Length: 169
Image (tube, rainbow, N blue to C red; front, side):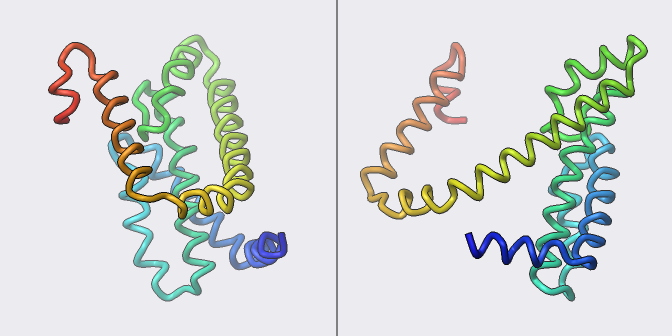
């Protein structure tokens, strides 16, 4: 718990918050552009982080990623074209709402859902990452084989009519 409090102390500094705000804004703009993925936005922001301290650089990259995920819903709701792959589901509900004269409501619901999803998943990561890492370090060859076999079986079962195409894809 001490490490979490130290991390919050580092992140809540004014210069880090300013860099994160710029990163979120850049992520939202890049997320709005259909076809311009979050990975491209992170790759473009990476050279700006080379001269920064590690905490600041990681904060900028995380902010661009979070902003890009949230920004993708803007074009999805307003144009019917999701800006990022993560906003496809938002397009199914947001675009019809925008066409019915409720674009503000669609954007607000999407942004709040994105915010709460990010916060909840961040809390879960903080709580369960140490436990999962301890468990994963105990994996041996048989566990890796079983995990791989389960993944291949899941892919094959979801591939539809052609089992062989699903396995080789």
